[in-house]
Length: 129
Image 1 (cartoon, rainbow, N blue to C red):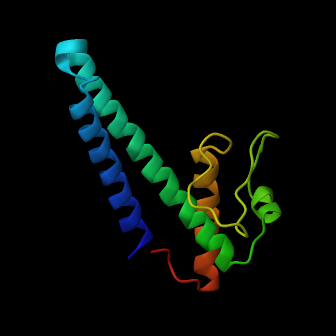
Image 2 (image 1 turned 90 degrees about the vertical axis):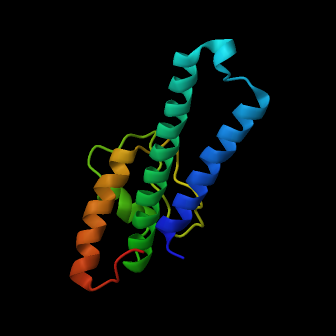
């Protein structure tokens, strides 16, 4: 199964679990907080889950291409302009199951993804699945 499919299934199941929990616990009941806030929280959680799905997908692409190109964490850091001291670049040598949520932005992953995808295409690496 492709990584994108796995992440999609996990995201859908996570959202379904959220909906089921809120339904049975009733803490987002329109009778308690109003229909506007209920809808807001359902949409907000869907947006957060989509963001995490997208960030993890890009993260998995970066790790895949970095491993195929045999790059290290230091090599990845050199590809990023204006890297802050508080930002931790992902390490392709470690097992990473989820993207770093707080200490590395999606923008940095996107930059790495674009640069590594170009390098991988030039070197004949199979596309990420």
